[in-house]
Amino acid sequence: MAFEHETVTRTERYRGPIFDVFTDEVTMSDGGTAKRDVVRNRGAVVVVALDEDGRVVLIKQYRHPLGAKIWELPAGLRDVEDEEPALTAARELAEEVDLAAGRFDKLVELHTSPGFSTEHVLIYLARDLTEVPAPERHRRTEEEADLEVVRVDLDEAVAMALRGEITNAAAVAGLLAAARFRDAG
Image 1 (spheres, rainbow, N blue to C red):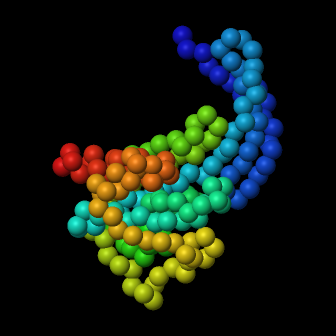
Image 2: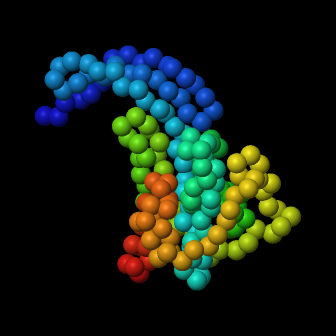
Image 3: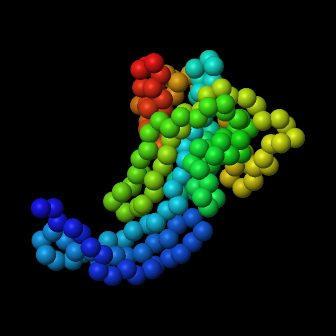
């Protein structure tokens, strides 16, 4: 019979617009309890936008915790209440790289840091890409104002991940899943 871990107490440490932090006291298998800090996150979507030439859209974006710009895939928080994840993916694709897709397929989903975070990421493959008309484009602000957007052959993007040039976990997972999806036909 498997041990059922139970939360004995929960203490809120921080409540914010993107995530909340709390400390749980949890029953342990040995009969005791332990405290575990948890970051509750809204979750996110990530988009591998693959064009007709086999290229993926990468963005280089400033990430303050790292103090650097890093290569990523278009992505965003699931911050619109009850919005279907594929619609969130479409919105983020349009907002970040001015693209629309005729087709979205879920590639993979992952928990980014299950040791302390509830963040759940859904990664989509977007195909049949078209440009969003100029008058309908989203005005990017803050760290998105100077996004660098490039299209890279999928195999080169996978190589970039394997060389450590792409380190965003969801981007690495998405690129590898897209290559596998493509190779499986």
